[in-house]
Length: 323
Image (cartoon, rainbow, N blue to C red):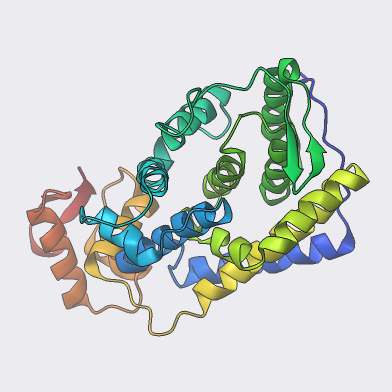
């Protein structure tokens, strides 16, 4: 059955193809050194960076240190609106794996959590008409409110059924989402969040990759790429900017010195590799080639004691499976 959808306008240029190739190569290198799920400490700091950067783009004043304090249930002196924005974002990013990036209802649910207590109609598409104003100028007139639902479903069908790589489609989604401007407020943070969700389903590294911090550092170029795509009537400039930002973020992760996986990280990563299949210590060692047999034994013993693994058999005949 052929699914009908409108393909948004854009061109895959030679430069975009080169960026795609560089990104794919970098993801391959990161997977090879098992950085696709970074160590727990790095995951936590990158998550904080992502929240701080995405909200800072929208005018939130809170620092990474203040966000860390909030996560640790400490009191923070900051405007109440900023604190609510951060608390909502923390909740949403903790639930990343629960959202279904191909479903409009899931997107509405994410917006409801992200904008709870900030606007009266969180989780609902706008019904009125809106324009984006910079200074005294309207820089973007969004489609009419009555068109929003249809446009969003059409965009989701493009993501589901078009054959272009997800790296391209996620950028197109991000741009088209901002163009449609489906909510009264919160469109920027949801657009960036949803691009992450679309990418992490194919490449787990994106769950903890702070692409938003690159965007924040180049905020004027981000808006320039959006405006240029608006004036040209296609998303090619925005795709180019976002792929450049993704490559920079991947390079940042790859260059972190002396990065080493701990027991908790190895056990967590191997669960994704092996799923529900049973495995032996030698399988674990074959995957983590840089650890000794004694370290592998300690990892497996500790995970068994913590009821993460169940163990069958004894000594060399032992096999393990995730509970």
